Length: 481
Ligand code: ADP
Ligand code: ASP
Ligand code: MG
Image 1 (cartoon, helix red, strand yellow):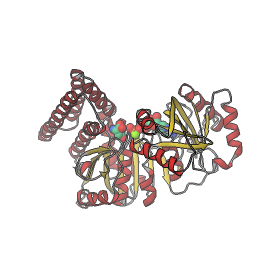
Image 2 (cartoon, rainbow, N blue to C red; image 1 turned 45 degrees about the horizontal axis):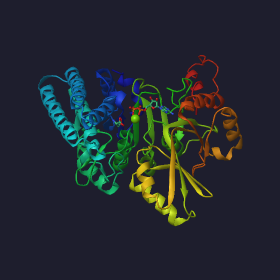
Image 3 (tube, rainbow, N blue to C red; image 1 turned 90 degrees about the horizontal axis):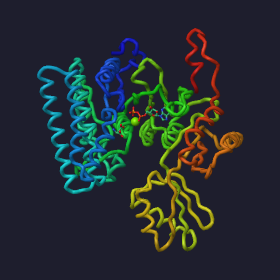
Image 4 (tube, rainbow, N blue to C red; image 1 turned 45 degrees about the vertical axis):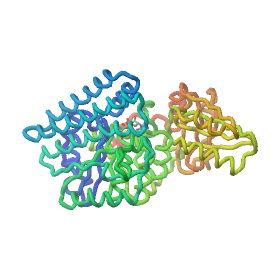
């Protein structure tokens, strides 16, 4: 367990800290013990904990749901059986005595419900997004119950709160949007009393419900968003996103081992980066924090003593390029209208995309053509059918959108020229100019994405001299921003 004394620099007031722990930060008993150490280190502040499902569980639930829908109920049940055993083993190593018996019964109850849901999916032979949300909610439901009991077992006063009774959303299953008024009211009724009584509310991230109580989810990676929604609703003084990397970095460290931590970023820069594919933050996370001006910290739960990244309203620095992101699985769509491009046609196009819940990333029009990018090809045949009388729709998938983010990056012509000199030997298909001044992005074949990010990273973040011991300065020397 981490030494709480080491972490005390944040522990300076009794303001509310919202702490979100992602899948890898609750993946096993050691991770949950680290989580407990971090929560203990905030014991002089009010704290609220949001947890993701245990690492990989959401993917496994999805896999089980798809298997059931395809007639492979046996394999679906075997998958959830493994998930159950994993939770049981964790319960056993973290909680004992009568509490363990109660938790055990609760987990067993959840997995029985999960099994009946899989039977229903197998009978229906289909998994629509509504059923999928119900299915995926088990991951965060079980992890949050487990973590609550683990916190209680170490003597912390924690209370499980069902996120579905707090976060109210519309019915866009798979990518639901909060209804802010209703959410604020529910949070006030269901969360505040725990805080006032000195208890630590523990909620599952990602999951929510419509005003009729139908389960919804906030989109993959949505637990970050849950933390921000709750932080904004409760007027938190800080939102901490605890994950498996040292902060927001100059690019995904899995792609580029030379990536460095960005010490400070503005809300705007971090939002752009998240929107353009940096998985470390769900793209919607920063909007509620920005609205309420609550700083967001991205921290490593394996190295809680590190400073991480601070994201706030303004962050001064003199770097033209702050980070490089890549969004995979992008499809470029071309719409060729039969008539002229006018407001009526654009209205019809937007309506078609909206009706198929297909969000558009970047859009450009040229004479006789509208080009846009989407994150999934699944709704495209339906959209093409809807627009049949007025336009031809074609698309190309397996693309990746590489994006460079930096305040005023567009006003730095030398940045664009260095970008295109660097990738001049690649088939860079489109130069995309979004509405923002903070990004330069282009489309490449997915197979070239990693190479282009590495090359660009080497140009814009050249390797530094090996760090020497400058009496405490060596870490700062290795970090960006
Ligand atoms: P969690 O389960 O904690 O929510 P995620 O897997 O969703 O964690 O996000 C953390 C991952 O995001 C990192 O392991 C890293 O590979 C990836 N990532 C992508 N871009 C960046 C970036 N610019 N900075 C840091 N991490 C990034
Ligand atoms: N468990 C969900 C997912 O894997 C949400 C999250 O981890 O933030 O997408
Ligand atoms: Mg995440």
